[in-house]
Amino acid sequence: MTIKDLLKLNIFNRLEAEILLAFLLSTSKEDIASHPEKEITTKIANKFKRLVKQRKRNYPLAYILGYKDFYNLNLKVNKHVLVPRPETEIMIDFLLKYTRKNKHSNFNFLDIGTGSGAIIIALAKNLEENIYLNSNFLATDISSRALKIANYNLKKYNLTSKIKLQKSDLLKHVKLSYFNTSSKLIITANLPYLTPQETKSEPSISREPKLALQAGKDGLKLYKRLFKMIHSKNLNNFILICEINPHQENSIKSLQKNYLKDINIKTKILKDLSGLTRFLIIEK
Image (tube, rainbow, N blue to C red; front, side, top):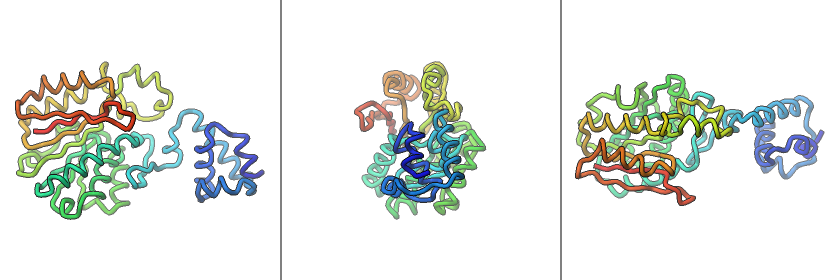
C-alpha cells in the first residue's frame, strides 16, 4: 500500500492525516505530501488507522502526537493538561512588549494554572537577557499531574533552576514574600472559563480535562475567587492578564469593579486576531 492509497482510505482532514503519518514514519508532512507513491508497511498502515480512529473520537491531535507547538516551543502535553491555543500567544506578545517598555523595572512572574507550562516557559525563553536574569518566575497549578508535565517541559528547556513550580489553588499557597517586594508582579492567568453547557456542546474539547476547562455556571467562578484573593492580599504594583471567552467581557469587568475597585487600577481589553475580546488586563 502506498501513502496515496492509505490517505484515500482514511481522509477526515488531509493535513492532520499527513501529520499523523509523518509522525509514524519520523519524517515531515512535506515529505509525505511530495512522495505519495512511497510504499507503507502493513504494520505502519495499521498503526495509522488506529490513530485516525482516535482522532475521529475527538482525541486532540496534540494528545496523539504527545506534543504541541507553542510560540516556537515544542511542549509535551497529555490528557492531564489543556492543549495550548494559538490565541494565547497574544498574551506572550503583549508581555514581551510590556517588559521591554519597562525594562528598568524588576519583575516577579506568576503563572496561575500553568498546565503544560506553556506561558511561563515562552516568556522566560523570549525575554531580553537582562530582564530574564533579574526576574523571578513561579508557576502554580492545582493538579499534581499537570505539574509533572510542566516539570518535564522545564527540564527540556533547561529552566528548572529558574522557574519554580508549586501546587496551589490559585494564590492560596504562594508565599507572601513573593508579593511583598519592590519588583513589579506580572500575573498570567489562563484559567478555566467555560460553562458546563459550553463544554458539553463542543465535541472537539471533550477529551481535555474538565478541571482545565469548566468554571461554574457563568464560567467566571475562578476569576471571581482570584480577584477576591488579590484584594485580600492587598496587592500593589502588579499587572494581571486574564484570558476569557469573548462574551464574558462585561461580566468580568463587573467582577473587577466589585472586587478590585481601587481608583488607581487601570483596565484594558486585548483582542485576538479575529477581533474578538480575548484578554482583560488589570494594572495597579
